[in-house]
Amino acid sequence: MRPIEVIAFAVISSIAGSACAQDYHGVAFAGGTVGQGANRYAGAVAALPGAALGRGLAIRGTVTAGNYRYRSAVTLIRGRYVGGETALVYQWSGDWGWTNLGAGPRLTDTTLRPDDPANDRRGTRVDLAVQGDGAFNLSPKWRMTYLGSLGVREGAYLVKADVGPFLDSGSKTRIGVEGALQGDPRYHAQSGGAFISMQIAKTTALQLSGGVRRQNGTRTSGYAAIGTSILF
Image 1 (spheres, rainbow, N blue to C red):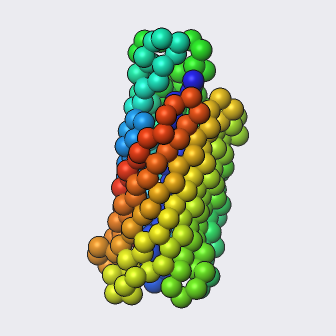
Image 2: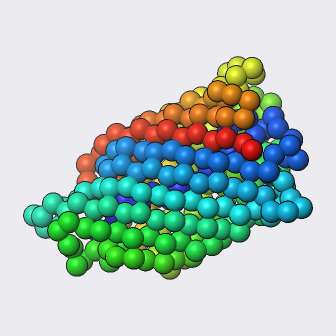
């Protein structure tokens, strides 16, 4: 069995829709998830010279860490991983929303206790990660955000989307539903739940979510997540 790998990402939250791209040059983000293990991530997207947030070329860097456990035969295996990813990103944005497309190297190091030779994710692994993320303003009130990520060598994938309306134009509060498909050639998982996102300062947004998750070979369990982003 492979680890429940979390591919970290930043989808600029509701505040980005009200900010002109030329006003900002980047966004920092951080968050974490608990449920069938735990993970945390942090990183930033920064526009390159001549570009701005939401327009032109940018560089993205992300670090991740987490732990999980699973059974191999009758043995309980505990795993820990740390990883990092960099990517060259091209950005588009407008009244319709925004889109980011990027690619770059991903490095992950996984430690298992006790060791599990059948788990080919143990040790240090290098991959090429390709990712697209963004949002569509479906109407003045409704927005959908999305993410798709693929590890070319390992075959690890994540497809995630959420949709919901804004409740308060002043705070940019949005609620709705979310769903995700995640896995690789050895495991597949599905999750679904609800979220609330809000602007808590002029350049800062917060999102909370929770729901249920199911992975092949395990029982259905709950999850909870938190994420924040800061424009700069």
